[in-house]
Amino acid sequence: MASMTFGQKSFTPSPPQKGSFPIDHQNECKKFMLKYMLCLRENKSENSLCRDESRNYLECRMEKGLMAKEEWTKLGFSDAPEPKTT
Image (cartoon, rainbow, N blue to C red):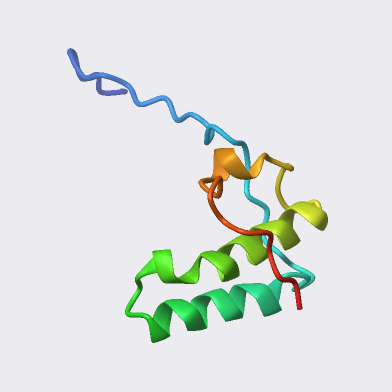
C-alpha cells in the first residue's frame, strides 16, 4: 500500500539557465583551471584578483566546446582587457 502525503508540494528539478557544464574529461583546459585555482589560493579566494586567469579558463572552455560561446559582457568581463593565453 502506497502512502500519500496531502498538502506536500512536489519538487520538480530544472536545468541550469545556461545548460550543462561538461566535465573536461580530456584535460584540455586543466592548465588554465590549475592557474586559476592557484591564483585563488595565493589571494585568499579573492576572485577579483584572478580575473585574467578566470577569463583564460573560460576562453579555453569555449574554444574547446566545453561550454557555449558567450559574450564577455554577459560573463562579467566588460571592463577586463583581452586575455593573455599562454
